[in-house]
Image 1: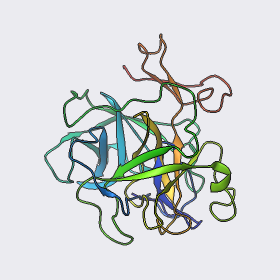
Image 2: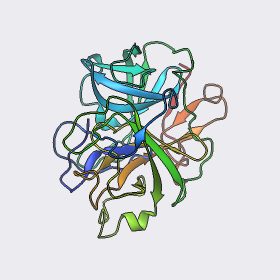
Image 3: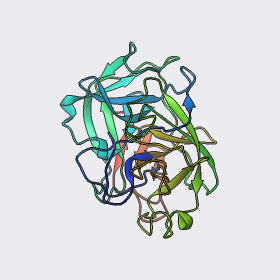
Length: 283
């Protein structure tokens, strides 16, 4: 879903670099306005988080048994939710998985703050990589994505304000905006924290919107840079910049699950204290 905030922003436009914002309501939504239909099987890591067959949010497969999404998408009990993998068009034959475990970022702040808007979802079994289902790499380094970097986002969110969800997966080219510019009085007016990242589309009539929350932000090196979190209510107005929860918390060294542990805490984000919590992706 997409998030409706008290600011003129729309909480569904977040990327793995989860930009957080405040909202009103119980669900978050984001969708791709503008952009283009993605080529079939070009995003085999994309996941649709659904309830009763209805798409709520995006997600990204980061391991054979783990999906990364936006924490704000998880307002429903996990027993009511399903993860749908291997689809291009909503409703296509797919692999549908139950959620065994939900791990929220330990410093997640729910609406209206939406900071550290990240969650790991453990599948009820390991998926077998194929042409239509394949994990996307997490970042290996500790370096933040630089302002001006070109990235892409994808999702099944609304294709126009007030419209319906996209049937086929859509993608949009975006770039990372300088944090100071994003936070000035013209845009977010100081609401973007150091743990968020701003994205902007190439055109004023493009942007993520309702239903796109939880989807990955993928940059030049082909890994998850962040998770879509929120954007303006109108999705394409002057506040169109989407907020993302950055992903810079990976520990690739043993003994953490043979180099596959996800660390939520610094120093992987802005070099502070050592990680407080590691999620062993091999369990």
